Length: 347
Ligand SMILES: Cc1ncc(COP(=O)(O)O)c(C=O)c1O
Image (cartoon, rainbow, N blue to C red; front, side, top):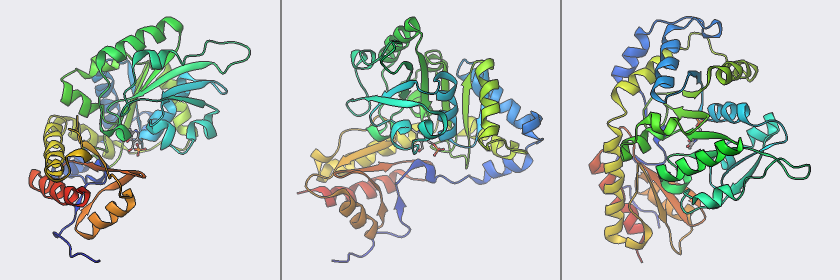
């Protein structure tokens, strides 16, 4: 049965990467002083690299086009060819970076299982393999915070601390995929530098909830960042007057971090509206991502029916769908979408 659309325009909750730059952000981009960043001469990029490194308590930063490249370079500085990085089974680096760490850098991965992306400390530490002549050497452990496929879940700070201390005792590196670390920071109040201090390399993204069109930043020691800068160029990621894009990220840091609290409130409003009709489909979200169980209905069917009725969400698994709130989605839209999706999932 073809159902009429509920509203026009569509409420698109597929991802927080759907944000578009605001007029004020575009103005800041146009006004940015620029230079050739491959020569290290773009003042806007240099300022942003210093700013983000300081925010996360690290020595240096490297502006990269994507979060995937930030993760690729971060892990590369810690793990040599033939060694492994351990991560969660649903981690973005394991599932959604198209095997780049293996294809390009010879890095193997082993995963732990978790509840919604959050494991207990022993589960992680028990997997670490010391160097022997017969087992793959665990060179690094990688976390994702907040955890995308886990449903925007936050890694508890005491857990991260325990793993960090144990890894450092054993000489195992630590990488953080902080594509949405801003969301974890706003939801918990934990300073960004407190998270940063626990990791050797951290990748953060400006093009998700922060609303910039492009851009991520890898932070670490000066030595690792110098090395990563060379590898970025080798990968084709050396960009020229890229201060235009760094300006968008800089604007986002000034204006779009605190407001993530509104996205979190809207995700909670969406989940509550779903729960009015389908309470067993949803749990309260921790940040801006809501994962819903579709019960007996295949996820693609729910996605297609919601789209027909004016709400776009994405299928995460055979029986799970995801909705994400972001800059530009209002509370009223979140509630309207939640009611519609809840109606599809009840009974
Ligand atoms: C948790 C996480 N890490 C990394 C990335 C990669 O970012 P990009 O799409 O900029 O490569 C994403 C993208 O959605 C993500 O959700």
